[in-house]
Length: 388
Image 1: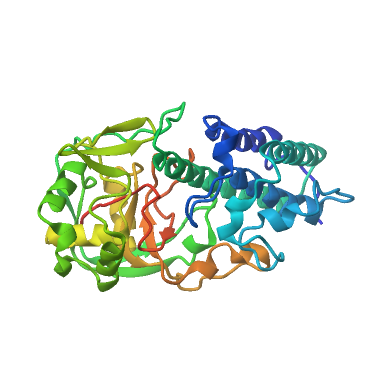
Image 2: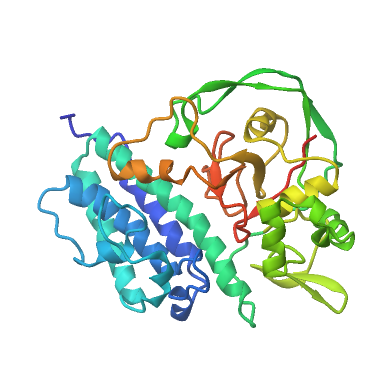
């Protein structure tokens, strides 16, 4: 057993990151917090509770002697997908839970914050500190998901509510040029002792052929050209699954776009506005990103090309689709127990996105970060960078 110490995670750091979750929700009314308009959008109240359950389950119940759980049923209500832990409410039914109330969930957060703060103050081991750090990284991921979900909830209401803080893309003013990368053997994966997820590990070498990659993202005006050239009607540009997805859902533009009186309008978290042609196009699926690249006579970069080239361009506006399936690196090792369910079990039928977005938590992005979504997903803040 290691000697308890307070030189690891601090109470102040813990509370600062925890309070950011409530800050994201400050624009919401209680009625906004329980709704689940589609399966992949979780109610904000659920995010508030699930991120709290993580600390109760993996820190307090596991490591703190004589800990009294806040509520016996909350583990069942707010477990997400950890089969090791036990039964849970299925994802599609999260929006049916009007109980526990928002106030009860906020009381739950306050109780766990107090318990963890006291635990840290009394001295914790390095092992426990590392679990708390993982919990905070997990919470920061949910903070970004919260913004996605709030935008979906607000963006599908006739009143188009507005956040009371700014989440704003910047114009891609840089003149487009293509950065050349020479063929060679390159090292891929997380290299430092700083925090990383297990899916970034398995440092390995990859041979890359000569390629070029754009110094900026595709803009709205460029994407409008694709729409007006009947890109959504030309099956030759699409994967078979992508074409079926477009046809079955009658897609004609990115998510949140509406054609009104001959103008493209879109919902942003700052209101319903005319599409700004100089902003990067967002809320596109992998299928749409691939079809656009085909139309331009180019392609999407692989995740390895993206990682090597990323030192030469700015990123962080939108997560960028790559043409790489989400798979384990060589020598990937899954952690034991429930924590091991975090990434490895999802390494099938998903595509990798790289970079970060304007919704990503501060200091939560790096060039080796591997985000992943199913190719049809569009509600996340996703964009396009071309390669050739």
